[in-house]
Length: 67
Image 1: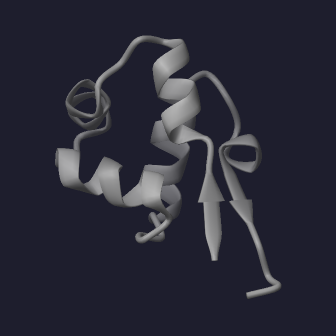
Image 2 (image 1 turned 90 degrees about the vertical axis):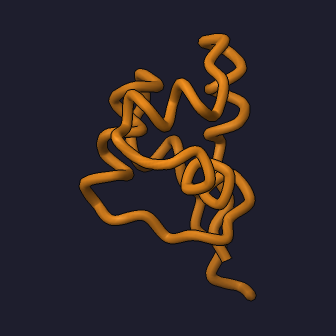
């Protein structure tokens, strides 16, 4: 199971899912699935989203190996 801080950081920068998706070059649904932990991004997408949100991949995604 993967948890993510995308929604929290997106709110900090006042970005909608649509705006973040446009900047990252993906569909809004992809951002929604990422926020819900239902989609594991490619390394490139993870890096792009982290860069847009001015953080690191490690800070953005929390991997929970217990489940």
